[in-house]
Length: 342
Image 1 (cartoon, rainbow, N blue to C red):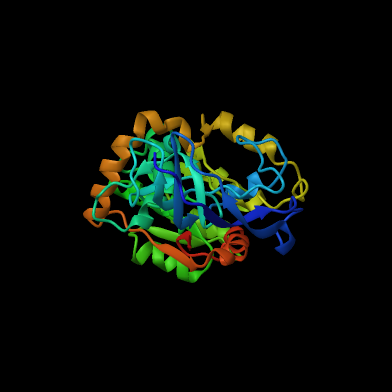
Image 2: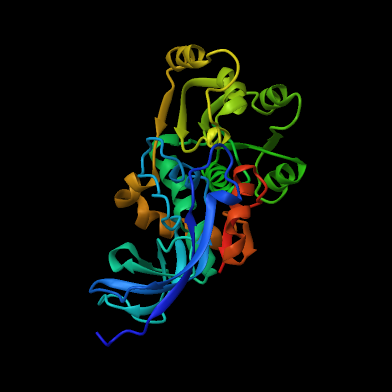
């Protein structure tokens, strides 16, 4: 390996653990020199940074499926990046990869944590969305837990987001009915008019529970859980016998600092699980990678090419925009897969 040039990075680090919603003081921007790549490592320059709701959990010290980000460390994120310098035999300078480059302009990453972007004729940004982690979350969760059949009804919360929109379209591709739940008239219209959902219900409407019931006259066979909170309360009485609930996220609770107001609803939930013989299964998409990743890449690219899997990206310019864009994401301000263009 040739002697490497020095590379610097501008990075956003976790300055303090947020109480509730992250604020400006949660983040700090700094510049640093990157170490030369050791054997097996790559120096990459980030082009797109993926912002996703799960990152709120990494900012907290609470027990979760992944270790919290230490104070002073770069915030973790999947990125589309260009290899600048390679110490790994499988990669060469100039290649585009998906890796965990974080909230920064450049990074040194292990080659084993990078994958080449497939040459499928689609924009490189799709490797972080419909053909990346969100799309795979939808695909694998539906394959393993949702198992939707033709003629059934699926309800998905946060339906205009990158996971929810893919879930609904996968249900339609399987011959099922898809009902989306989203915030605001614009997102609801998009679900029906652009993505072909059978119905969309605005969770902000005063009569939300009644509207959901009217949209699901035959009950609900699969409820894809992305949010929790009052949406789940409205879904619960509508679930059919042998209903399935893939639990993928709880965005309504991510900024919570205490127990929700009101009565304890867990006994009622457990009673429904028993009475309706429900399957409730939480999952993290990485557990299904070995089994489903290759099939996902083929099937999803085909559905996109056929126009049966539409996607939308919300691209925000500039690394410095990441903190504000992320806070907005947790409040539902984005429309489509949220990406930072570095």
